[in-house]
Length: 116
Length: 111
Image 1 (cartoon, chains in turn green, purple):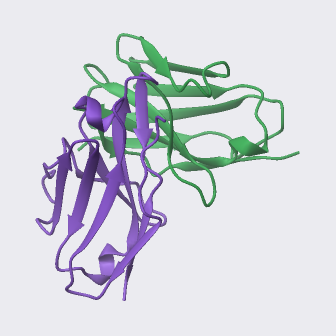
Image 2 (image 1 turned 180 degrees about the horizontal axis):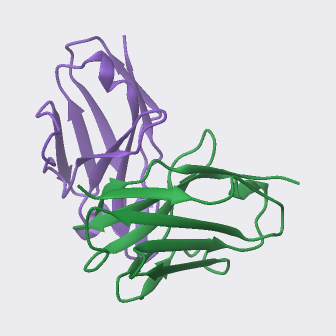
């Protein structure tokens, strides 16, 4: 059974870079797309972007200028970097596996607060 | 418009049937892209309930069913149970964004 676990700092200062890692276990990282999704407090889900195991990426246009998603197949890690964060980037961040256009496995999510 | 619209809340008594609508546009649901549904419970990983419009992953009770028509989709929950009280989101792909879009989310309350 595939399992995903997000990790990273829970507090980031404004204007700095948010960095998170998603560790994948129980299945290969290959042959799948991997998404990052976030949910600000009291709001809905927002797709941030995805990466294919080949390294090709696609980002939400609203975040594209600040986002980089990468992967390390040897470590089975999918990483997210979001630059120049503001309070509006405070959210629970999820990683998820994409299969047939849907997200079939998700991590528990990690809350990242942007505050000085 | 690239987003998907859902009612903010629906409610029903235990044992009743409720439906949640998901309204899109010609660039997402209307373009033929599949709709998927998720259940979010506090403190738990989001769960895929319905994929490809109407298919259920193994382990999801058949009380949950999905359908799609035109630019809209629906999730139905029959025989509503207390543990179904949660937030539900639809999701599709949007050709204008060239990416995934989620619905606005619906809170289901069991009376």
